[in-house]
Amino acid sequence: MISANIITFNEEANIADCIASVRQVCDDIVVVDSGSQDRTTAIAHELGAQVVQQAYLGDGIQKNIALAHVKYDWVLSLDADERLTPEMVEAIRQLDLSATEHDAFAFRRRNMIGSRWIRVCGWYPDYCIRLYNRHHARFADVKQHASIGASNPKRLNADIVHYSFANLGQLFAKPGRNFSGRAAKIMFQKGKRANAFSPFTHGLNAFIRKYIFQRGFMGGVDGMTVAISAGLNSYLKYAKLLEYQRDPKVLEAEDFKKVW
Picture 1 (spheres, rainbow, N blue to C red):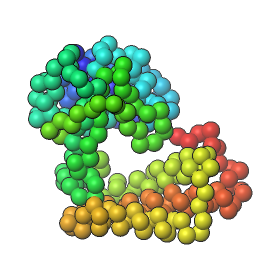
Picture 2: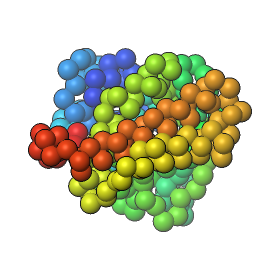
Picture 3: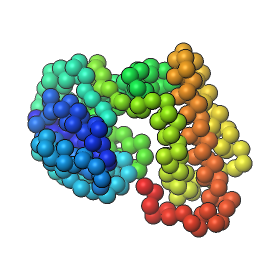
Picture 4: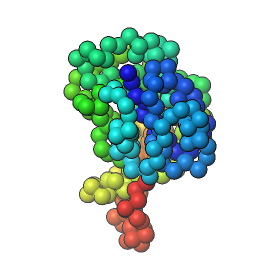
């Protein structure tokens, strides 16, 4: 038996398909919602999911909230914009979770822009642990980019699909949706500091890593665009960190108790 763990905020366009996807292998579904203002929770209730309300605490911390509400030892964690492929459904059904020596299983993830599968820039295979025994593994209690810590995970030869961005405009809007600002606040709180060259050097490094070393040049316009977006996000992150150091007025106006 497997429980599903889904975190949401204004995901009415995605939640029904996500629940239908996990229901192929789960009969217990927990949705941890952070105050959606659309029909996300109503749809989840209608589809038989248990909905838990929790103000957003950050990625890993939020995903661990469900562990107090799930029925089973094994938990499948998907984001609302992710889906199981038929091959992944079959791979999960073939597992003997009552006798396995592994405490978690990692899935390959197909990251999409629109209907285009991006295979370069480190976007594939993008292995991530999403099925885990909650008594032996869990998400790290961090606010950004949380992953599951497991001592003996196994990779499954199957994919999930991540509908990352509906179009290139959304990809470029990501830094502007304060992802870089959140990261800068976390770095500042941890005591990390930047210098005048940091935004440029980190931005350039992120672009080169994506475009050259992770073969973005083989992805045509999409590969170039992903690499530029990564460089822009890194540039803004360090530029905002530097701003906290250089401008007392900006620093005074910032509320570091509300990273999210």
